[in-house]
Length: 297
Image 1 (tube, rainbow, N blue to C red):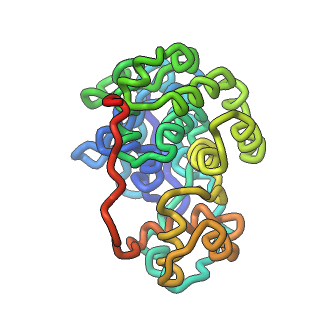
Image 2: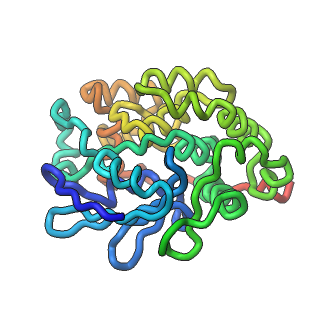
Image 3: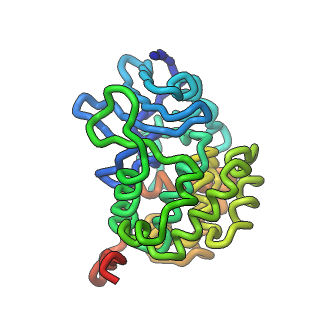
């Protein structure tokens, strides 16, 4: 199935889809040499593969599998078609150039909560490499092959029932300790209710009522599943430092970050995206946090 869509105004397709990428070897996300982005998804109609490319101001979507129709129908909102940027104004000079350069920035929504929740939980309190390794292992072991002519090795996230049944020794082989494994399994029992949440406030309430899910994880999920432009990842290991350094030249903590982001109320997540796109980072003062390997414990 195919669809051609012409967005209103500038749109950076790869930038809109990049938040769903979990490391360079993500089995559910791939960018090919022709510039196209491939994604897999477990839609309400079943598994599907989506290929998205852009040329001459138009977006071309191709999809395969039982979920193909759903993926093409929701393609515009996935790319931020209903992202309202009218209330956003750049308040710091350091962001002016990057905002012009990335005028095509849009925050899209997938409408799929578990696809955002599982990798977010795997990323809790660990370095990215460690979480992405676990994500790859679990998808290759429990996911299913991507429908259609997808790039080799692409997989579709398993159903919620599968996450509930993964044995402890396979979580261990993936490199995820018992706490994160239990959080994902518990959330999977409530997957239907989470997927049905109609607003970001409702989803936040439901997520944070589950053990093991706090402010950071809820924000990471709502940013991707519901396209919340104001969901700040409070508690992130790097974000507060980056925001403080980019806007003031000094590091700060989470309360300090929230104070700096107050002028962007309603669009604080959008502001943090622009801040990270500046590339401004405080000088490294020590060795990086190493990736642990729970498989050796």
